[in-house]
Length: 115
Length: 114
Image 1 (tube, rainbow over the protein chains, first blue to last red):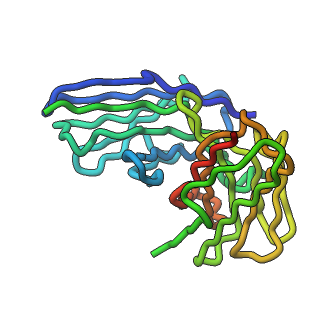
Image 2 (image 1 turned 90 degrees about the horizontal axis):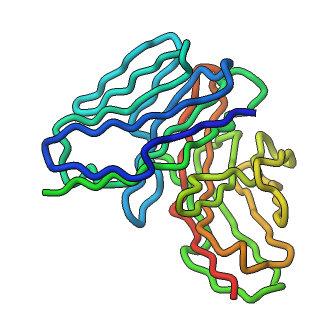
């Protein structure tokens, strides 16, 4: 089955700096890679996703890159703000296969943005 | 706006008790999932269901069972609760889409087993 490794487990940055979180996956058939953000005491929510036919996707201050050859993908947050502080999870899925939408999640990264 | 609700936000149970956690979604999603969330371990899949009365084991099914009698409702059952099942339990739902999909999460149930 799929295995997703996420690093770092904790990340502390100053407001305005950039933050990068990296994930690797094992199943070359995986073709969908979402990122979820979980604020303290709240439910995880999708913030951005990327499919295997795309190398990079941006949405305002967040971007995700995918390297299918190396089987890794990364989340980039620029100009970080205190409200970006949360736990971030990456995930991988073989959409269209027999996984029935079963995402495999990474272990999570606790991002703290200091004012 | 997708709504996924869970029956309780907090539960305290005793070792050996039978525990029911319920999840309801209102978007007619085919897929439903139960995860447990523990610090440093991320979200681990317990069971999932892709249709009414269908269920599949996830990565950590031991000590749990599930029931899906209606499309909108997915129940997680701890037959005999143990202290190592103290955790945050998250339910999610999604629709089938060959291009990828979004899972919508419930608010979570924090279970303490004494």
